[in-house]
Amino acid sequence: MINFLKQNKKMTMIVVVILAVVAFFTWPISIADMLSGDDGYYVVAVEYDAKAGKIGQDSLAYRFKAGEEKTIELQSILDSYTCHRTLRTLTGDTTLSSEGMNYWIYIHSGKKAFNGYGDQEISLAGNIYHVGYFNNEKATAMINEIREFLETCETVE
Image (tube, rainbow, N blue to C red):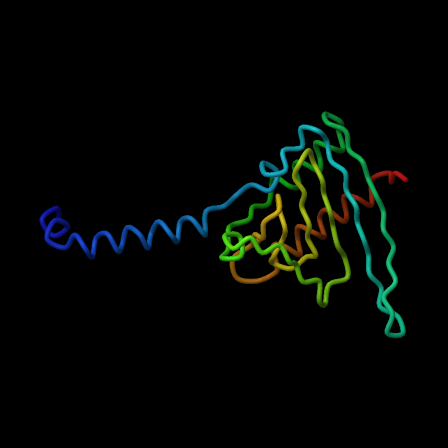
């Protein structure tokens, strides 16, 4: 095996580079770790309702102070989901599409923020990442879990 690798150095390098690139783009990144939560969280939830061709919206704001029970609950939810890099992470593109979505979550902690509509792409710490690998199921589940959690919390003005 070692002789084969020595004889085929070029092929070995190509395989190593391909594996490194695949690992870079598929390695899971903790959403909770990216947001930290050391300063608590400020959350805005916006529900869009399309009526008669117009979009109305209701928004609710929540504040979670570091160390409180609800903050720990939110951090636990965020900790149960991961994201991974995409080509858009590297290009610096920060545009999210909300087409077809009716609920938006914004979470701010310290100097970092999370934006998600329930589709696969999220904005986290100023970059675009994917939740899940092949479809929107994990991202939708995450937004729905956060949404259900927020229904148990008090809003701020």
